[in-house]
Image (cartoon, rainbow, N blue to C red; front, side, top):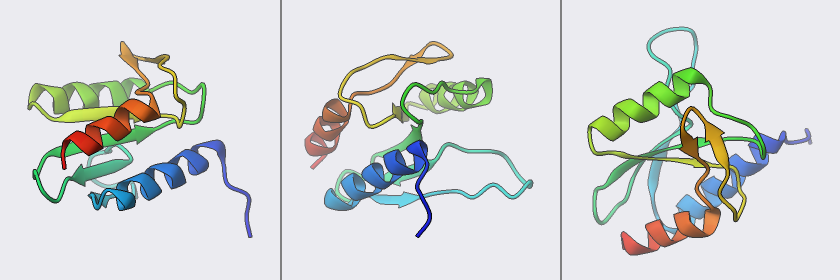
Length: 112
């Protein structure tokens, strides 16, 4: 069994949380073709709300490209979350903040 990276542990938490709330998600794999994306593209099964998630290792920051992608999503009234598994907010760079995990859970609960 290979050791998980800090970001891998956050992704595992997010996957479990999404499964618990029956949220459909897709994790694009970048192969050098097309346009890059955030880690998770999601849709809630009841409300049909689309949203995206970028996971970061605790203390890590968004890249400029990730900031641009979030801006593009927000411009189309789509939510984008930056999650690092923490319960406290902090700067994620590029003018964005990490969403505390408890607040993200409330978002999922309010969509049901």
